[in-house]
Image (cartoon, rainbow, N blue to C red):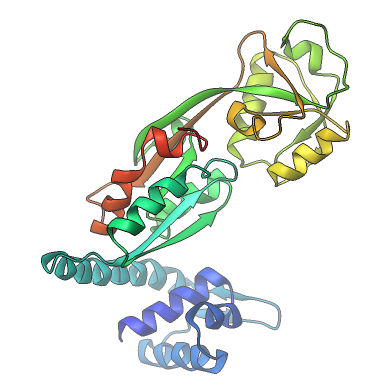
Length: 295
């Protein structure tokens, strides 16, 4: 068994198929299939269930993949340690982020690139629940996300920014002249919501429950710009963090009179000592570089 075999199996598991894994590894599909079959023969157990429509891990595969990831990480850390002795830093850093929060990270990435051109960064965008799981599985090295207190358990966190969320509406939608609204006032309006598992959705749901009122979701979208477009055409209102609302200056915004949902963005990583490349990137992620793209 060698590291290349482990890399291939992990790629198939993460990509969900042999063809996608081959694209990721820049090889032909037959090479991926042959590598997996050879390893399965060596182990005496199938790692994947193969059907005409999908590829899934067997119980043996479920046990093998986390161990393979750990071995690959250890090998990468060993290479990085040797590079550090020579005054070089290389490696791969996988960064998880939610839609709408990573705009300012280009500053941190630019500084990392200038300091350590041998480090490669892979960005993975997803719902906060998926990113948290990826951190625990080791498929993401660090993340810039919004987590509540319960979701932070077992992870190392550092706060980057804190802001309130605003109600965003079409310019022509009538409101009282006051800049503030109440949950009761807007509950009857059609809402553009984000999917369950998104941090924005979780905070907005929590705020409406605390206000003991319910809103009426009419649209559910998984894209910030799609939500803004629906609002722009007055098909609904939406709640989003102030830094996101600022990207759409043509839309009307209103603050909540009290108990507004909040948005806390933080840099998060698993416990233990980070790999040198991860530590190098962490040094450049600060409130100025990651707070909604501001500063």
